Length: 120
Image (tube, rainbow, N blue to C red):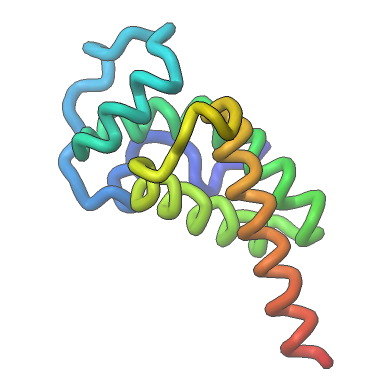
């Protein structure tokens, strides 16, 4: 099981914000509402969205890059991108989960191209 980027402690590292008590969050809060809160700079909302989607992003990344270390880098870059680009999400482009997973796929392909360029 993936453990390198799991949990609120890692989310804190990516947001640079103090996390508030996550127990105050509703476990069924929608991804859309979480993203709205992330747009307002709320690190605790980021931590919940991260926990909700990290395993799927890691799975896609591992499938593309082929190893755990590179996949963990991809996960880190993907969620940093989610934090930084939260305000660019548009509902017209699909679900938030699809947006996050596609960002992970894009980061993994970039990682793969970078590795191929180093060897070739």
